[in-house]
Length: 212
Image 1 (cartoon, rainbow, N blue to C red):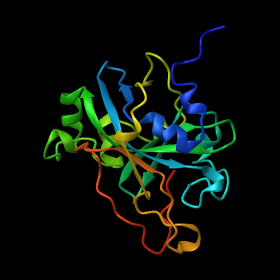
Image 2: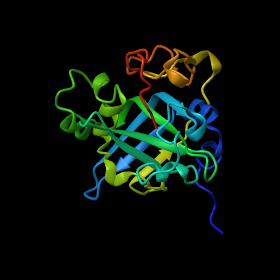
Image 3: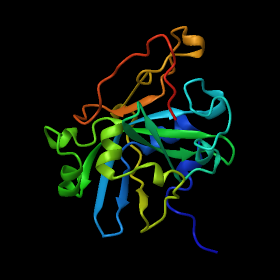
């Protein structure tokens, strides 16, 4: 029997716990032609599926959200605002529909490839500063939704040592309010303090923007 991948234990955790553990880890995405981009994750949001009004899976399983209901350790990629792809890592047990939105990171390998994919970026810190930019820099699209993380495969997660509590900041998720749009927020956005790649915060307004 083969050994479980190094991220198996982390991505079996509930979303809020897995989000904390994901900070500082590196997601690597490879193309068929050998091009590789790796991003060190500096900002992540947690979504708890059918228990979470901010989640795409809140109203149940659909064809689009099906990857979220699978066991942790795969990608969920969705299209937003008719313009951008956003990437997530599924976590939790089979059927829980939990996912982690990858909001921002630092490109640590494949800078030239990321720059070519993100020619509008004003600086390297902006290459993956925001979920749409991060997905674009990695070259992820809807065709990757449901893709399993595998060692040496198209997508691989290099798990870092846990960051110290003093390095982590938490706050409400970007653009998300609580049930019924009553202003309730969930402090499920996690980021590394002092990281220049962390995206700007925008509060939720009236209607709930559904995340992963």
